[in-house]
Each structure stands twice: as structure tokens, then as C-alpha cells.
Length: 190
Image (cartoon, rainbow, N blue to C red; front, side, top):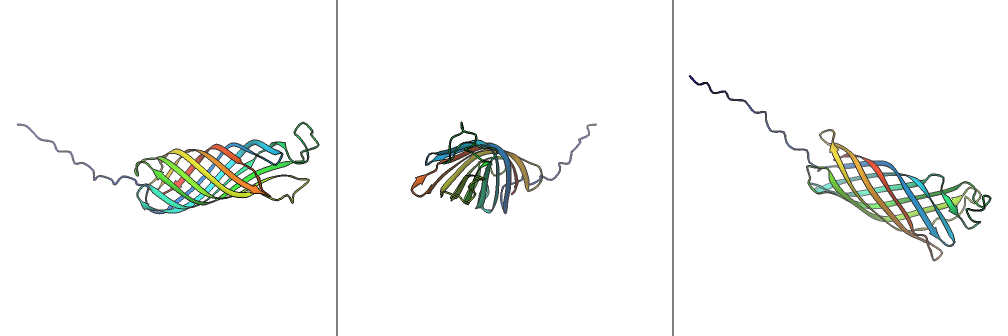
């Protein structure tokens, strides 16, 4: 006599999908550089961003983002002198803030490979402690990133994102191109 054994299969779980409300924070490190008007500063940088939005189609998030980079002990020259003259730089600082709309596209709405793009208003600050009232160049800024995330919960994923930020601010008809490439850890609720 042959017995037939039937195994009950568990109910299929619905796959996790990048849809609904979108919230992402990032934190990482990179490099930063700006120059213009006889000035130049560069060095390591701490990078961060905060993005909030929604999903009109599974895998595509749209919304608003704030992205920042802060130079860590930048070096170079400001209008007062050169890097070879230690008295020329007094505790220099370098930072960039980019505000604007973003898009984050997941190539497969159920997986983690994605591309981000952002464009908006950029504010660059390059100054030293002896001249804290220096004016800040302003203008257009752009950011592009490519990353991979893994699911750690029904709506949460974590990952790594390579990001390149470019700002093209101006002050008194002088352009101060600024760039900040880096790698950040991403924490996404989507």
C-alpha cells in the first residue's frame, strides 16, 4: 500500500515593495573642494541628507531633500593669503547646503538597487574665523547617487550609496564651483 504524503505549503507572503511614504536619512564621509576669485579650499568632509516624499508608482519616490557637507579641517587659500603662509588661514571652514526636489528610482520595486537625482538651491560657505561675516555664494546645485539596500523590516531598508554633489554658486559675478563626492550609509523607510 502506498501512502501519499501531502505537505501543506505556507501562505505566500507578499513581497516587500518600495511604495507609499518615503523617508530617508544618510550619513557618511567624502571629499570637498571649492575655488574661485583667487580662493581655494579642500579636504575631507562629513556628508548627510534627509529626504521626505511619496511614491506615485512602485519603485519611484519623489519629494524634497536637504543635503549637506561639512569640511573637516580644510586647507588651501582664502583671499588673505596662501596655504604656505600659516598666518594666512585662521581656522578655515567649508560647507555646502543643497535644498530641492529629488527622485529616487529602484530598478526593481522589490529589490534594493537604486539611483537618486536631486537639483535645487545651493549655498556654499568658505571662510575663516578671523572673517566670520564673509558673504556666501549661492546658485544651482545637483546631486547624483547610485546605491544598494537590503530589507531589514517590512518597510525599512539599509544600504550604501555613492553620491556626487556639484554646486555652481556665484557671488559678485565670480563663480565658485564646488564638488563633494562621497559614500554614505542610507536608512530608508519606504
